[in-house]
Length: 317
Ligand code: NAD
Ligand code: UDP
Ligand code: UDP
Image 1 (cartoon, helix red, strand yellow):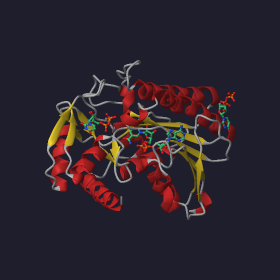
Image 2 (tube, rainbow, N blue to C red):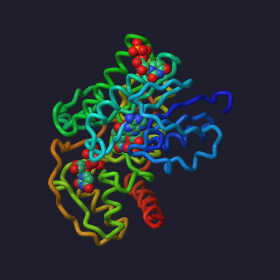
Image 3 (cartoon, rainbow, N blue to C red):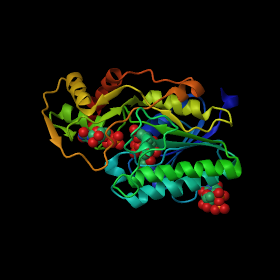
């Protein structure tokens, strides 16, 4: 294992997905440099890794240049929850676009492979269902979600131009809604919101009628897909969808959360946010073909694990 050990940079490594990725890479024997500006991430997410001499945590904003020596880069830095990415939308676009330029410049200088955490949001409010990678999307360029959607789309453009201009080893994955332990309790995303509300006996907030759909992937499955993608040969660039094709309405999700928590929380309807996609489900045939990957953890089981985490987190708070 040691002879194949690499120096791996994870930007956004103190966030929800990033912290799980850092943990997995260390377990595989690699050295991990975790870079984060702690906008939505926290030192606490990686506190259990700080004692490992192969782990290093650096406070840094990826919109500024970064000079380090690494073999691989996972570029995850970017707030992912609509509440957070809309808080400072200009910074969100900068993080995706300028952050991508800096990390691509770094990858070019040190000849590192670089993986971009793109998103199902590049498909916008899709009129093709489920979404294959060949679908170009239906995105509002000037709305409240655009800072995230268009920032991520531009980052994809940069990745493919660095590939064409500099033959960089790029990997682009489009991540669909992912959930699990270490989501922030005030993260604003639906899984954490609903679980926290159910556990606290507060009203469960359903935006709109709750008929919009999402497909939820457990974080361990996603991390497995990210690592498999990084390990593909130079010819493989993606984009590749990573997500769980099990599709649920938000009302179904709420019912499942109530059942698994045994909560009597009432359902409360709130206005649907603008541009909220009506449906979303990944076509993961390409991930199966290229990576031999498919998610293993069904929603019911992943939710049970996530609920157990939030029970502990809320007791400790
Ligand atoms: P998160 O908000 O928990 O993590 C993002 C991390 O990036 C945080 O630690 C944050 O502090 C850090 N960050 C933000 N701006 C930064 C900057 N300018 N410089 C350095 N660090 C910065 O979100 P997450 O769910 O862990 O998402 C990780 C990545 O995966 C993001 O790029 C997100 O767009 C992508 N993604 C996630 C999902 C999902 O459902 N979780 C879906 C699609 C895409
Ligand atoms: N960059 C970085 N670390 C490096 C090399 C480059 O952060 O090790 C940044 C730097 O800010 C640069 C950007 O990446 O502006 C793009 O680099 P590239 O070499 O592609 O372009 P140029 O330097 O010509 O702008
Ligand atoms: N949502 C909801 N209640 C909440 C939070 C979100 O009904 O408390 C809805 C939201 O309108 C969207 C879906 O759940 O239709 C998923 O929202 P999330 O913010 O998790 O992710 P995204 O919209 O980016 O997929």
